[in-house]
Figure (cartoon, rainbow, N blue to C red):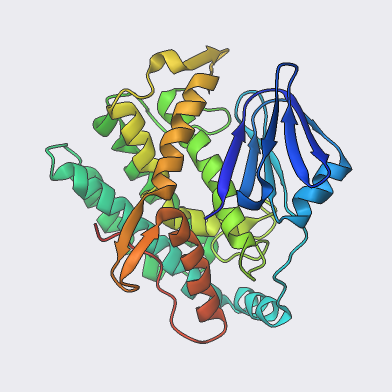
Length: 327
């Protein structure tokens, strides 16, 4: 599993011979490109085409965020695992509504099951989340009856509304409703930041398969450039991003002091971002014993395995069943 580098300082990324350096006014640090999978930029960084070409040669993806931690874009090296056959299959399953809905329904079913796994975990520890669980279980019955992706997205949105009602009960922090642009309180800020970073993580994993990330099934292609990353994110957000949020708040790794409010906007300070990303990286690198593969698999590799599972379905090797947590 390649490393992820997070750069918060402002400086310059520069190639000298076959080595990459990150330079600031105070220091010059070499970066081992052979071990890097992605680099995240949270500070102001200069880089030239020589450095970009070197990064592309080593299949390293770059992700950029502005001062407030909002995602601004990614640099994806040219596809190096092209498959015309798989591209045709992806498009075929998008154009055929029945085939598209088979995948889209399974994504929402799997995401809902992982949401319920989280809520039942806290219910068994005395948290009063019974009504949220009941509401989600009732909405789940509607997934099979959805006729098109738009109707399915509406059901998925209602499920998440119930789910987010439980966040204040689990963490003790207030959140009346989910507000994205811009987030207005601590919980909304952490959800937005976590989901954005996770979107890029999923995108990087898709990049290392033969899937085309612009062709999706639940989300409409074109909503954002790499909409397949949004599809697969839905399945894993509850067991990766949301669990990190519960951990950093319930263990006081992040507190109110790590946030700043400007004109109703709530932002994570740099210290808070670093604390969140450290916990997030530990989660991605932690492993579970996979009951089918009979070996330990990291959370990050679970995402790539999901992409391979989708590929097998698209080429007709096996039925698609989205990942469900069992622990």
